[in-house]
Length: 389
Image (tube, rainbow, N blue to C red):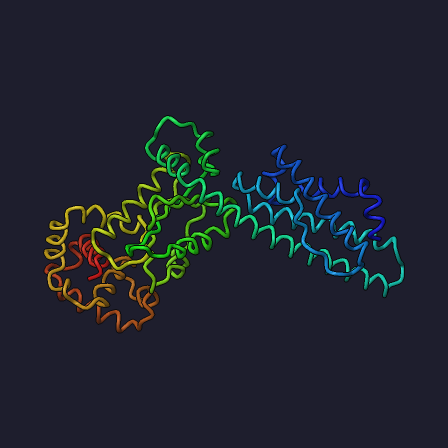
């Protein structure tokens, strides 16, 4: 069977590559003539490698295919920011190859037992070959990408600076230099640490975690030794609970997140939001590890003048400003939940009676009834939350 595959390769390989390029996740590769041609060469080389090794040693495990054709397309995908397409390509090729092998198996034998053994061997062999090859290729691409980024950081920083400043650089030229699309939606992040010589791998781990579900790769730039600027592509909102759990509470890494925005202007605006959130955290010496701009926009504006902010908090909260944190947090949740004790209890995992006692205690400490100025009270409590008091 393997001999027939090698001998008749012209009759089946062309169709296999064409059908593989039609699979889900392959549209960007199929639409680019250079990537399409490279992909076709890699498909053919990989599956001829599998067939040839099976001809030499039928049923034995096949070594990963890492020839020049595979290396070439992997590097091309890295340069285009399409490395996730590598996995899609191998999955598509696996499906088409398995379909072809199954059809061939029925022409080789009609004996049910032999057919079952043959199909089991084919399914295992192709699956194992694709898994091991994909794993090695992805390792190679990660290493290649890290090498590219190490060598290109000065150019990346320069290009990002031009885009952020609104300098006269065309979108197409900027995208080519960044390896990142600007005509899409983005969410900007800033990862940093206040510790000198600290390890920023925690930021890389967070970015990798957030980027797994996204179609295109993120853009990461290092403006300094202790900071990384990141843009995540896509219209999906970041899972806030997931992000907060991904940042090590015992580490020194902190993350500021801008708003979701589209296009070149969105690239700038989301980054500006993240910068504002980062500066607010630094200005207030906040202990918070993760900050989303939309959660602190009001606080950021209020605390731009620290003395005025402190006076506002004292005048608005009175004795509540010195109350235990759980009392203040309960009243803030009570305001945010429009006075629903049940929702606050569910949110804080506490009994309704406990919530009612805390709210009553908090209201008794306010200089004016809560009903008269709930917005001001909520704003003052937010300031205290972010200052860590």
